[in-house]
Image (cartoon, rainbow, N blue to C red; front, top):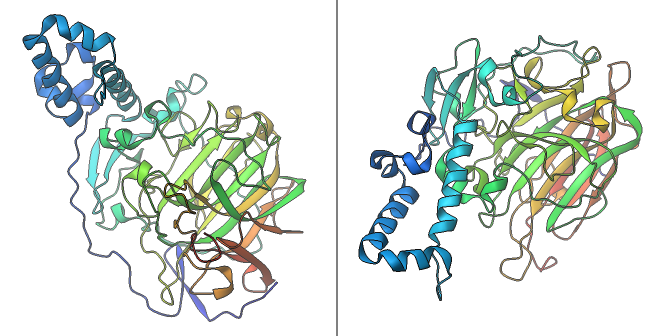
Length: 468
């Protein structure tokens, strides 16, 4: 594999900034977003049938539905019964289905949007709620009720020098606002977030699909490096951050680490973290810091970020799901984030660290089956969804949107990839394999050197003359 020469680097905040320009993308840019939100305060102790009109009219879907039902009942009381029970020709608005969908949305928002003691408005339109730590969604889990976040675990031993870096890598924190000690920042989920979802009942979850390491499935395509064949207790990497173009609302582009155990059938366990661009989940094209977990191959368990009870956050300055700033630019400034996932030797929980020494939180071991012990594979790389809406391959980009051969400053990279061994040591990868599902669309090239250790470049533009 090619090994590329590197220029001198210096560290800035949590990003490694390499020569070229030093400007921050999107700095000073604000997008005014009008949010229609059914909040906990508005819906607490109410259900749809008992809502007053002031609540109903605060939401477009509720307002439309209420006025429609009122009109139908006044004009044609008998016919209204038929409308509710029988499909009409060319019908596009189904009151019964809308009521059911609305109730799901209201109940879900009540469940995941916890009372905030402080609220912060982000320049990108996000609302960040500062929620008391022990009231976060994780503690709705039956096995966590009444508990509080655990103390920090023993960190894996690493020969590299620890650097003290700041936490201001997200847009919402650039104003200088932060959440008080004893709280955590949570990106507020809005009604519009849920209305964008292809399935309201599965909001915040990946599509059910059979997962295999060596092939794409259900339109998901990968360019990854992986190690397998041993027992792994964690993984670490620095991930280059870009803002790839995503072709439509129901596709995404992400770059992440997977810590995996179980077969690639219904018992698959994964812990995942990285950055993603997902218009469906977030309503925009910003790259966002995210986490995910599942214990049954994305079927009934797990979710993104804090959208269900599972991941326990302990940090009051990092909002999972919030936009990352700055990002890399072609032939310009390069920025990356360092992530470490490892299994606490004492309690068995899987912890997440950002940068050097800043704990984000943990996944309790009881969430998993196979991962209660160890991982059998670690995977790094990019993933996109190819929906083929136009009948041809998607133009959704992976990484920077450029092929691996373009190298530093142009192609996206993973560097300093390591795994955690049985004795809680961070060690270099052995026998790293690379794989691209469709190398004419997205490819990958690996290497090793004294500065970056194990690394690879990866990505691509999607549809092109060799990828129709």
